[in-house]
Image (cartoon, rainbow, N blue to C red; front, side):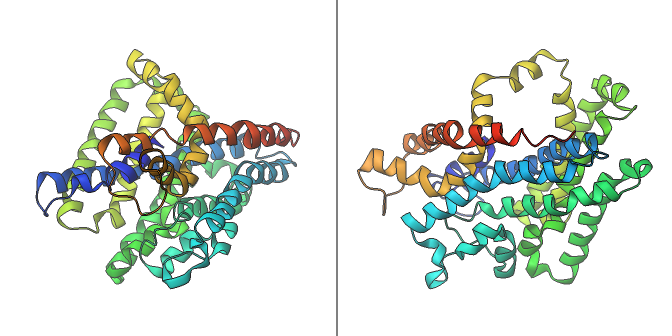
Length: 352
């Protein structure tokens, strides 16, 4: 969540304006890659949701409990975001070609709308593109896991990775001008979800103990993938399009190895770093913050510093920093008044 906020608020700041090739432009580009926080989210989702499906694959209640719990966790807050977007901004009307139709937010198809447009359409609903990929993945993946042969479950994650990579490479070769659209289509982002699912299967298999205990191997893999990301950064800056082919897969593998390192941490700095209270605070409230970042963050900062919430001048560095924390109070209200009570109710729907 913090990576995404840094990319959106700091990376987009006019304080980093500069001609192409300048130091500021390169810093802005590096902050733009903070958007790979979405890829980390996909990896974590594949790991956590995949783990649930693996644990309860044989349960007759698995599908019902899964869909009820996912609905309760995701839909109410997402629909609240759509309703407030219509009420406060009217962007969801789609007038003047600047908005996204309201039904895309309520039907979780924002990613498909953006894919058809083949460009970003910046409105309070834009952040729901990744939520659309998640929801479409949730609709089909439980059935795939249920039907997949038990002995072949270890190959399901790699199959998703290879399939998504192949589709993007072929698609980019045939239609390079549609690279953005490929990044919005669910089946083109299955590599991140597949890496997460592969990690979920791995930690439940007999191979997990030896691999997780081999810290030197894991850190070497992470270092090698970090080098690949540095190459990607250079290539993407000079010749955009690399991310649309092998870039998303490299990012997903990097986060997948990082996930395995953090899953059973032995190094003290890893344990301390990933259990920090302030990170857990953002983790608890991250869903609301992600959905409402465009809708509320900048308007609230503008209201606090300038006394108005529309047509504000470019924000200073202190005002930009305030964007990173100003959503915590409303996110806490959402958690304690909406999300946590609904989650407690959803626990009635047991998998077993």
